Each structure stands twice: as C-alpha cells, then as structure tokens.
Figure 1: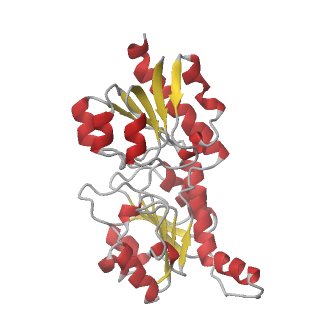
Figure 2: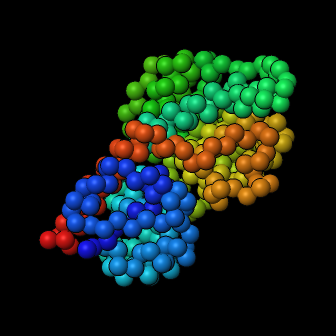
Figure 3: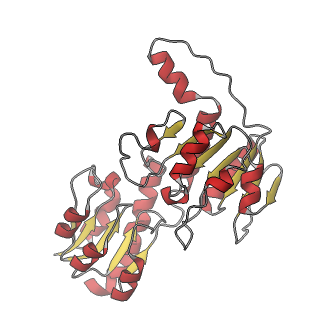
Length: 310
C-alpha cells in the first residue's frame, strides 16, 4: 500500500472524514504525534516511503526532503509555502500544490476580530474582571478610522469589504491592484503611504523575495500615534524588535498577531508583551475552513498522484 504523510495539526489530532477519499483510493495515511507540529527529526522518521504529503505550516528542511526517497507531491492545506525548501523541491521534481482561498473567510474574520479586540481593549478588560476588578477602558470605534490593507488577495479583499461595511475608509497596497469591492472610500497607495496614513494596518501578503520585513523601525516611526498593527499572514513580515520599541514608546497601541517565528513562542518573547494580543495560529482553524482546505488538498493530491497509482 502506498503511503501519504498527513501533518497538519488540525488533521492529526482528529482525522476528519474529508481524508477518506485517500483511503478509498488505496493509500495508507501516516500521521505524526497527534495535535503537535512535527519537528525535523520526526519528519525524517516518517517521510521515507511516502509518495504524497498533505502538509501544514511545519518547517520543512533540506534534510527532510533528502529523506523523502519516494515523494512525488506536497499538497498544502492552505496557500503559504514559505515553510518549504522550494529550490530543492524544484530540483527534485516534487510538485507543490496549494488550497487556494480555502482559509480566506476564517483568516479574514479573525483579522477583523483582532482589530475590534484591540480597539476595545477586550483582552485587558477580560483579564481585569477575572482578577476581581472592574476595568472600564475607553475604546475607539472602527467607524471613521482608516484601515490599511497590505495585500489584496482572497483574504485582504474580504477584510477591506468587512471594515468598509463598518464605515471605515480603506487604503491598500498591492502591486497587482485587483478589483476590490467595498462600501465606502477606497484608494491605492504605496507601502509607505499606507503606514503613514492608516490608524490600523493589517498584513495579508507573502514575504518579500529578499526576506526582509516590511514592518520595520522607519515605517513604524511614521504611523499615527496609537496605531494598531494586525498580522495574520507571516511572522517574517515584522521586525519584532522594532514592534516592541514602538509598543513601549506608545507609537503602537497594540500588535495583534496569529503568527510567530517560533511556535509556540518562547516565554519572554514579543508575544508576552502586555500590548500584544496573541492567538495560536488559528486563522484557518474553523470547522468550515478546515473542511474546505482538506477537501481541496486531498483532491489536488489525488490528481497529482493518479499516474503514480495507476
């Protein structure tokens, strides 16, 4: 029986019925430790003999691919492929497949939720009440604010539309300038113009080719006082030292993020800062998103491997 490695945490803890077509097609499914992101050593032990891989966001090193003696295709249950060694995969002729748009609604909704949580100090209010207090922080409304969207793909478009429905103005940066349907004021701008003009900046773009963060000290120095930064995209987009300095100095009111360089983040890292709202990479972790992403990833994998299994 030919084997397929299945590593997303949302699938290994409680394998859903969307995986069943792989079994029906005659594949044996191989899982890592349930509910945990597999490390390099575990992947090296699991990947030999697997012809397909339904992968999550776990880092995949050159050593892991070197051990993948039978691998023909990697199918992501999302769109991000920054965790994969792309040059080596291309050299080996291993196909890379993405579940385009499957997580867009879940990630977009979380992004808007983080904006509202930051504007209304919801985490701090909750913590204060649990501690026996009665904090009553004065918040701000998203209506009449300017929201900057960096990247207007499937997720960024939805965020722009949602905040505009709440009467925010939108300024956006995307080199492709796709059609974005909103309910109110909207304009295209450069990266620098977005940071200088937005009360809230939300990141929805891939990492730059040069690997440098787009959120750095010079750009953070230009944001309006008490701005809010939202990151549900990639940890590498942000210079964490610069963000910490902006939080400490009051330039940023809050940094709300779902992504971290190391997951889970280490104690004392930026995630522990009192003005950081942190969620544990749950943007696509909804019943609907997991189901859609898994269906697409499974279909992509079956299509890619059909010749191999004929």
